[in-house]
Length: 151
Image (cartoon, rainbow, N blue to C red; front, side, top):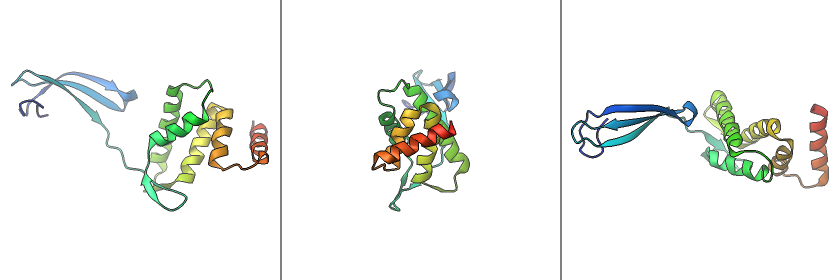
């Protein structure tokens, strides 16, 4: 790895640590030529997930967008941000394991609901009401009845 400061190409690793729950390695390096230290990160190169939206447009998968939706659904619920991050990791794993180039936004929504339901039923109903565009009290009652039946 080249030194950031003097461009020497023989820096040495003086410390390595696993970060991001095992998804990256942080390396502290030192340049033998100028003596300065710098940090590098090694990560697995991720595939770009293309999402096909309802209207047919395509965009890159944005886990921050998923997080924003989950934060709205779990507002004033006793659910930590760490739990939501874990839920997003599970959703991403499921997407990567079943990816065939593109994924429909509807499929992502279903994955979110499946995982969110296990975490918190109230947050699940909130998310489902927006995702499924509930327009009446009947829709809420049907969804709650469905949850009760499936236990």
